[in-house]
Length: 236
Ligand SMILES: Nc1ncnc2c1ncn2[C@@H]1O[C@H](COP(=O)(O)OP(=O)(O)O)[C@@H](O)[C@H]1O
Ligand SMILES: [Mg+2]
Image 1 (spheres, rainbow, N blue to C red):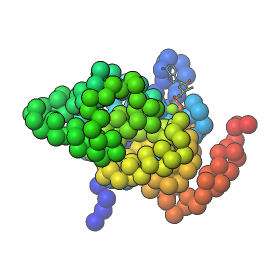
Image 2: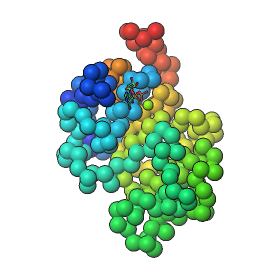
Image 3: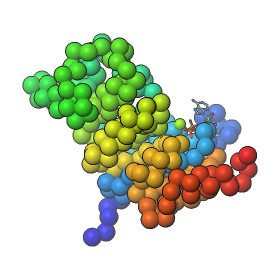
Image 4: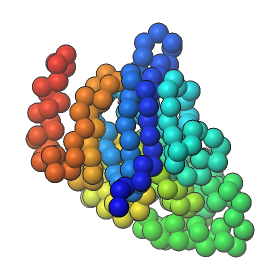
């Protein structure tokens, strides 16, 4: 059976200041339930691309999700894990941060309690409902931010530098957790280990342009990808 196209990006261009384009002529099809890792140097446009896909920026060109251009109904199909979990956690209690999505999308009160409990169990923090988000460790905040997304079961996960600033053990656990979630995933990362470990495909972004797309079988090692980054013309 042919894989279903989940996200289709066509001739996407974006600039923050209408002078310098940060994304240039991006064309990419992403299939249902595949994991695509976007790698590239700082400033290459990884975060901006995720924000465009999420409909959080106004771009030129087209992004279709399940064949539809961006509309409010598509919002609940997508979960965005921000690079900094503090950008996602703004409630006084963990419970309310995780309940926010399900409440917005009209779930019943009793069901919401169950969902929060289940989400916390899934991220390995059972019983954290009454904790204060800004008192948690960085790794715990990351997991609560992820729980606040999986609480409404989005079909698409947009993950921005998910392993950044995590200790080696937290990182391994967090990667396992991400892998265990069934969804179409786009992961922006400059951590090549994440790309090698999780990517069904790896996309190299350089100064806002897609330079290369590898299939899993072509991505042999971190060293292979690193060499490629070092060889990029115009870089160092
Ligand atoms: N809010 C913004 N306003 C203006 N320029 C921005 C803004 N955010 C990012 N940029 C610029 O856009 C480019 C791409 O940034 P970004 O998408 O954050 O790259 P990456 O995530 O790959 O590090 C960079 O040159 C960055 O300085
Ligand atoms: Mg970024």
